[in-house]
Amino acid sequence: MRQRGARTAGAAVRSLFSLPPNPEPRGWIAVRAGLSIGVPFGVLTLLGYERIGLQTSVGAFLALFFAGAAAAERARALPFVGAVLLACAGLGAALAPWPWLLTTGLVVVAVCTSAASFVFRVGPPGPVFFVLSYGLAANVTSVVDGERLNDPLVFLAAVACGLVASYLIALAPLLRSRERRRPVQPLSELLPLRALGAGERELVLRIALVAVLGCVVSLALLDTHRAYWTVGTGIAVVGLTPSRGTSVVRGLHRTVGTLIGAAIAVAIAPVSAIPLLAVGVLMLLQFAIELVVVRNYALALVFITPLVLLITAMATGADDVMAVAWERVLDTAVGSALAVLTAFLHRRRPVAPA
Image (cartoon, rainbow, N blue to C red; front, side, top):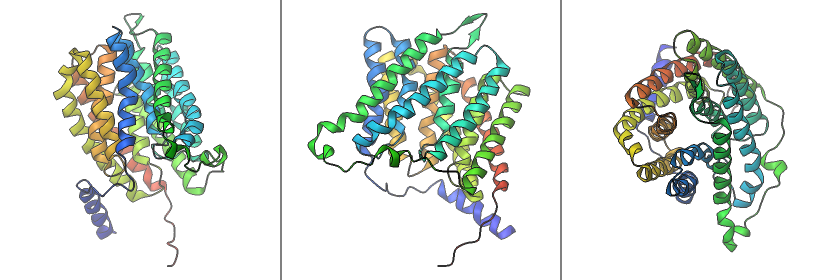
């Protein structure tokens, strides 16, 4: 048992420095992801509405789903994903003034979107960005001194614009005749409705536990509006595979990647004072995420963390990015620890003979 644990820990550490080749070319996928966040933000910034333009960045999460699918397949599947992202953002904005309702809503969003992701076989990146949409909406539209930081309706309109821009950019490859000739799966195969298997039921149970415990810890010791990061971290660490070893690896990657990413966020925080430069930085971060996410999860977190931190800090007007970054590191440690602990719920399954 002790030797097995040592081997698992050693493999987890070695995986931090592993960078296997991409299973498929991701250059254009990364370009589309970068454009999805940069085009609406950049256009509105040039028109003098940089704050609203920044809020469209939440809609750019749509670009991360079905990234490797044919453009015609994305055209069929992404509207459903976009509707859920917008609904999560709307619920977060609606419940932002009430801490208890906000945390209850977070648990509901975490469990329901996780179960739906498994039932419809959505695949990577899984439910974590639904939770981030909910949490970012609550933070960006939170109540300070009796007033909303940002108008919820304006925020949701901006998110909707970001979703539409991401959707249109996802369809851009259809302008090429070669892309139009690619075989296309029907929607029933892209989003198949299937019952949860035993491993998936364990994953949903783990996510429910992480969501409840993460919210309790945030309510008691941290900050209600930070619970989404703790829960989102836990969901990411739980992952899409019912495996104890996978959770240990993802927990380590999440913690190390967030720590480095938080330091980068502090270093590049001054770009927020120059809107067009901020547009370019967010585009580069989103581009880098899609380029490396299937190769090294910790490296992807190095880019995801400053992306979300910059969006949050700029949208809420936070001046002390260092404090926000430190909070996210602490939230990540809590969420990762909870997720790894729940990994013991997985039953060891016999290995099928070769």
